[in-house]
Amino acid sequence: MKAAVYHAPHAPLRIEELDIDEPLAGEVLVRTAASGVCGSDAHIAEGFLPDVPVPMVLGHEAAGVVEAVGPGVDYVRRGDHVVICPSVWCGACEMCLRGHPYLCTQRPVRAPDQPPRLSRGGEPVHQFTNISSFAEQMLVAERATLKVDRELPLDSLALIGCGILTGLGAALRTARVEAGSTVAVFGAGGVGLAAVQGALIAGAATIISVDLSPRKLETAQQFGATHGVDASRVDPVEGIREIVPGGVDYAFEAIGNKTTAEQAFASIRDAGTAVLIGFFPAEARLDLPAADFISEKKLIGSRMGSNRFRLDMPAYIELYRQGRLKLDEMVTRRGKLEDVNEAFRAMREGEVTRTVLGFG
Ligand SMILES: [Zn+2]
Ligand SMILES: [Zn+2]
Image (cartoon, rainbow, N blue to C red):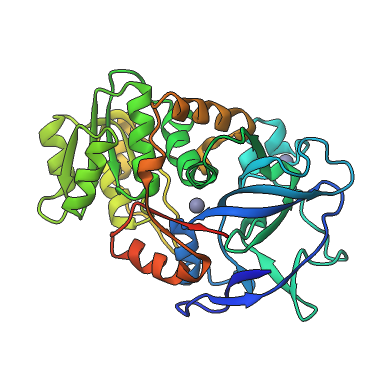
């Protein structure tokens, strides 16, 4: 099967022919229908995490059709439509038992003495987030799948697997935004727009989108932002405090940038909450006024929308069915596997909300 393979930072992904194994116990082989191109894939390709093993197939926001299941799998069967999620969980480790399955420490993956899921000429090829969706097929744990109705469009549903789950969940599950509250969201890419939608669904009264691109700020208004702050023209903290004197109740940082993370913290009111959703480079550090914490300002992290995806995704899909969650509108460009490097470029240049790659 064909896949887009990452070999080294800043080098384009290469389209190569790979071998994919048969599903073992608890595993599912999925024919990829659609894969979103997420910021995290681009970050890996740019060398954000210098220690990732290579070669590796990127891609982790996907949907497809089950082709085969391994022994013991009874949740899905051949022909079922599934959304794939990186938050594979074991159900037995301390984090799972504490109610944080997205932080599972014993994810069901293959042991070192088992054959690799992906290989080329007998040499192992690594999976990104145990998924690797920039490929015609995915071999994943059954506990990375959510079964969905066949009439729903897989290319839109793919976005639920990462961007929507992450942004919506940051607002609804991590921060639990209250009705009537004031919210700022730094970054109007896929995850930022999902956080805007989450704030809207939660009933926030004021939703301020902050970005460097006036075009993206306009897009954010289509997804529920009540205000836009153009950070290329004004200081975003001042811009936010002009709209909400005293600062917002919640600020979300959906970029993974030191400066905007510090600005997000500076834009909240006393006892407000700043939430870091972005994917930061390993060496990133923040510089914050420690005295602010006596005013009960809170800085918290959010991982994949604090999800329990088999509960959360069906709820988000129902909001989509009812027209209260916009998914189709988030897909602003479509392409094929071969277009993945172009999709990275378009994302960097701020030309797209999401590119979705389609397969045959
Ligand atoms: Zn992602
Ligand atoms: Zn676990």
